[in-house]
Structure formats: C-alpha cells, structure tokens
Length: 299
Image (tube, rainbow, N blue to C red):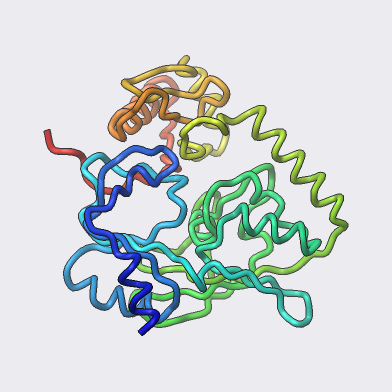
C-alpha cells in the first residue's frame, strides 16, 4: 500500500519534461512518474504500454526534447535504483541505474575506489551512460564493467555479462526495449589523495575547455574516426555561430548552448546546419551524440 501511495504521489500529468533537461527546452509529456523498485517498474510498463509509448529517462543531460513534447509516458528511476553497494569481499561495486554520475564519483572518493574518476566530468546517470558507453579523457564506462541487470523486452529480469555486450565508441548493443536497472564494476583500490588529484585534473580540464556554466547537453556530435568533431566545425567557421536562441559554444565548438531562450528547434536546426556544411566541405557525415526525442511543434 505504501509503494502504491508513493507511486501515485509521483504521478504528474502534462509534465514539463523539456524544462527538466539540461538544455531547458522542449515540450511536455502526457504522463510522468518515478518508480522506486523493479516491481513498480514492471507493473507500470505492463499497464502503460497498452495505452501510450514509454520512455525511461535519466537526468536529461544528453537529450533534446522537441518542442511538441513526447506523446507518451515518461518513467524516471528513483528509490532502489539509486543504491550504491560494495560486496563483502570488497571487490565488486554494485550501482543502481538511476544513480547520478556525480553521486557515484563522490562515493568512490570516500571508499578509495579508482577507475571511475572520469564520471566526475560527465553529467548523467549510470544506466544512460552504459547504453551510450559514455566516457571522457581516455576512459569509458565499459572499461571496468562486469555485468548489467536489465529488464528485457518481455519484461523479464536478466543479467548480461560484459562479453555479451557489444561496446563501441559512444554506443552499445543495448536497444530501446531493454532497460538497464543495475550494473556491477570491478573495484580498484587507490590512495584517496591520488583519486582526488585525478578528479581535480578532470575538473580543471572541463572548466577550461567546456561551457560548464551554460545550458548545454554535452557533446553534440560523435567524433568521426579521423578528425575530432570540433575541428571539423571550426573548419566551417561555426564557432560562436547563432541561430535563434541557440549558439555554438565559443569555448568548445562541439557544444551547443541555450544562449537566449532557445527553442529545441533552434538547437536542432543549428546542429543540422553544421552537419550539412561539414558534409559539403569534407564529405564527412557527423552523427548526433545528443538524443532527439518527441515531436516537432505544430505551427
């Protein structure tokens, strides 16, 4: 009964989903709720999928919610999905998929755990990071991964080992029907001062090279094989370029920012313009790293 009350309490209709993203742009979803357990998650999906599309989100850090919103039900993982635990042998770190990167990085410092310092430089949650194999400064989330617990397309709970997952640069073999609920990582012990030092270096690099104080969603495009995306964008002279309220960051040209009350359409049109210009000049197809969700606003 208590679980039902907490679920109903989190239920919100015509929810301002776009405002909860890092860009702060975009429309509403029909229904939003936060689930706190596997049972709540599975039961919610069983009922909801009969009526509307379902979207599971993290912190909204690498998405553009289009101005027409998402015509469906949005589920956020809370409660038990944000647990962080260490096993009795002190060798395995278990992390709920709804855990924020910053929370895990802080936990690792307190417990002298190394190997995940780079998460302090990535906005997001663990589940989303694994799906896109997030990383920065030479490290990625799949490096120390042992396995994941998922809810599959038939709503069965399943453990997937690291060697059963196909990881590539900024992507994995997980699809939209599979929901990661938990992950386990190898524990590497290290002196706390060394961990703090590495995190401090990452923090300094971010502040100097990324628009951390602006409304942004992280890297706009994946880096092609031969050239970093920012270099290709600089070649077309788009650093600082504006379209409506959207702008290419002066600090890092692979970051779009909500500069002056941008719409999601401003951001997406500016990104597509960059893609077209790079293709015309270099015949290189930039691929979006930002995930674009929902419908365009009807005029």
